[in-house]
Image 1 (tube, helix red, strand yellow):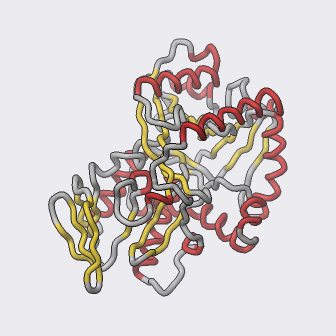
Image 2 (image 1 turned 45 degrees about the vertical axis):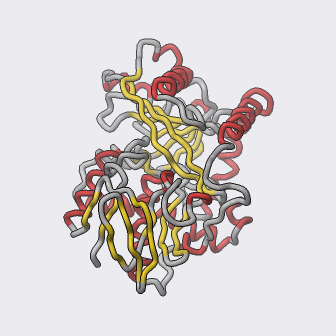
Length: 380
């Protein structure tokens, strides 16, 4: 099959490279919640495929010899309150029943994973890793070209028209006749082809990297080199850089669009809140952001609608899931009569009145901050 990749800007210019590089295979649902929304068999299949995304990415990195600093180092979910820790303990058996191994750590045990007095213990997920995301995207692009794909940067798609037996895709500089089209625009779907933008909620994720520090100082903060995520609704996520000399720290500095200087300031305040006075002399050296896409059911989706294939909606967990579901949607194109993934069974739906403009995010952000305040200071 002859394949062309059409990219509006440079390959990796969005959140594909501008993210925290965390490889987790986790979902936004607990097994009990998801089983109530679907059924136990579908729930188990969804968790199985989410978990499969990590070894799938690892195998691809090995097979294509992609040098992206990957390590299966595990992820530590830090509990912001004792109530959050109790919920992690209650969920541990549910996760084990769907094949997800976790270890819940007390506050004292958690200090061996994260040198912060802010948290009350947490949950360790061994099936998780970290990498340098720009190096991953570059390696994937080189592998695609090596296998015969034609990559067209700075070719924004301006229209897709149905023709006999296929499609004509127009870009800023050319027209392509093709049998199949795959839409993989995720957080950048607004103004793009197909009906998908109104079913996705784009949101900015902001990240900073500190200036260089001695490696032993970084190890003292995150002794086992884990990926870290806390349990707030407006969460922090952070990690050592792949070379172990910086802290990479991200989060929803704002659910709207703010400048990199302001997002960097807010995230640096968050980093100092986590690690206290030990960060007083540290400054951010880099600040960036990327746009991710959430779905209304908080699950990723692949499928085919009106003849257009799509893979969309990774809900902030796209480093492994986007690569895995890219493989699945390719299999769906090649063998359209066979089900390639459980995620094909889940309809990608929007909401009445929503057009793709996330005007409500600042209001949602205020609500999430209020819930975090109540969790930390009232319910605990």
